[in-house]
Each structure stands twice: as structure tokens, then as C-alpha cells.
Length: 195
Image 1 (spheres, rainbow, N blue to C red):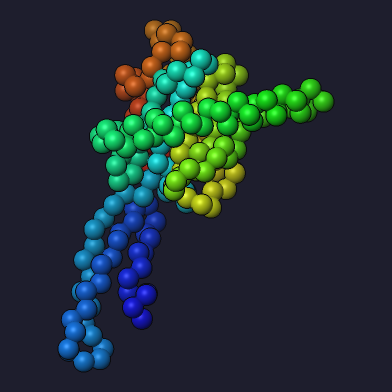
Image 2 (cartoon, helix red, strand yellow; image 1 turned 120 degrees about the vertical axis):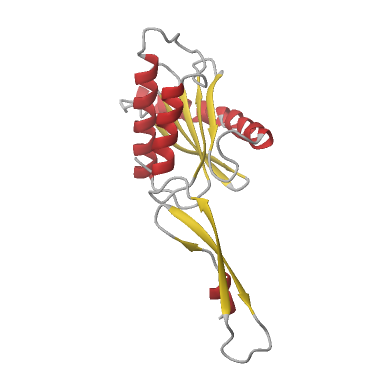
């Protein structure tokens, strides 16, 4: 019925929002016209990545990229909003690291993947810490995110980060926004769901 006619349908790699228009007064069944507006689905593996951030060991922002409808860092208000979300996550990162350190003191192993840090508004923030104490944060727009997908995404992002800072001409703990190769690779990984 009407509920089925108004829902949004998902296609594999992109999603198309379908608007159904019925013509009243033409009897049963009514003719329905479908207009499609294609919008990118970021993260083809089943989760929608809204933003990716890299923070240095002193919590200085090295990189922030937004994806989706407001993507590409084009909209300043959304970029500022994600800066706030990422920096609000730092307290949760420190809490997770402290709990891992106490567990490691008892013979446990430190895991770079921090998992879900906290939910905020319509997003969930996940974290990862490298051996050099750089923090990789991902803001996801889904409720159902598998840890295996997030771990794979963070492994890919960590590899890209290591490849970028291994360049002898790149200064450690300097911004990555000017590095075209890093930006292009991050966009490719997230948009194509290559994790």
C-alpha cells in the first residue's frame, strides 16, 4: 500500500530515493509515476561513513573529511559540526585507552581498535589509536555496524596513514589536508567500500 510506495529503496553502490505520485480520481488501481533522485551511498559494504578524521599525538587535527550529501568538505557548517563531534570524542578515547592500560597491566594485550566511542545525534563515533599515538576516528551514520567492518576500515586507513607519513618529505604530525594522494586514497576507500 501507501507505506510501501513511500519507502526509499536501496540499490547496491548507490541509493535512489523514489518519490511516488498518485493521481487521485482515476479509480483503482491508480497510476503511479516514479521520479528518481540519485544520491551517493558512501561505504558500499553496508555502513554509511559520514566523516573520517586523523588527530596527532597531541590531539591536533591533521585531517578531516566529510562524506555523503554534505560531503567533500564543501559545506563549512557540516565540517565545523564534525570537528565538534571528533573533538568531543577525545575524552572517550582517553577513557578507553586508560581501561586498556589497566587490562594490559594484568597481562592483557593492547588493541589499537577502540570500538564504539559514543553515539551523538544521529551518528556513532568509532576510534583507533596507532603505535605513535595518532588517533583515527570515523563518524558513521548507521545503527548496525559490524566490528569486523570497522576493524577492516581502520586497518586500511592506518595503512594509508603509514604510507603517507613514511614519505621522507612529509613532516611527522603535520596536516594531511594538503596531501592529494592521501585524500584521494581515503575517498576511494570510503566511497567504494574497499574495506
